[in-house]
Length: 115
Length: 113
Image 1 (cartoon, rainbow over the protein chains, first blue to last red):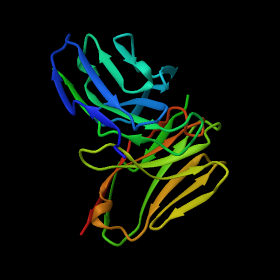
Image 2: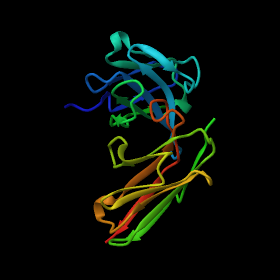
Image 3: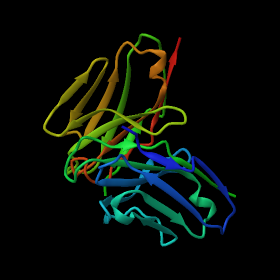
């Protein structure tokens, strides 16, 4: 089965611009998560979708970040307008049924550089 | 909220020796503790996990121990091989893994030939 797919793999944008990251979870996985790792720091939770609903968005840094998961399939994470501190690697992960604890499958991440 | 501390940040061991990475957590409600391995250019990959009703779990050369009283858990890799070189992350979750994970800062494990 195909894994979690993220694109682009790299993105370099100027401060003030908009960037949209996309995540395609493993087919049939209800849970979709976004995480971010800023250079040298821990991987931080951003939010959790169960199908198309936001289960927990307590980790979203501010209102410049908008995540959507239309139809409960792929998800997008938009940053508008981007700031320098938004640079980092954004990971998406998915897992199967709500309440199951089989562990996540992570994508390879999108490395975002804001200059 | 949960806070996970991970040590050391870098660990260099000779091939064939054992490696131990330690983590502590703050939230006594946490009940799920996975370990992830991240190789260059790839996303974190789950290598082993343990739940709070178990004190130890082993999978071939990898083992994890959990001390709920002291709120710490450790990853043990025996007979290390060059392909074990990677960044390892511990994490904790109060939701059994279905909710968001709180990660440690990672340990860069270097296996010296």
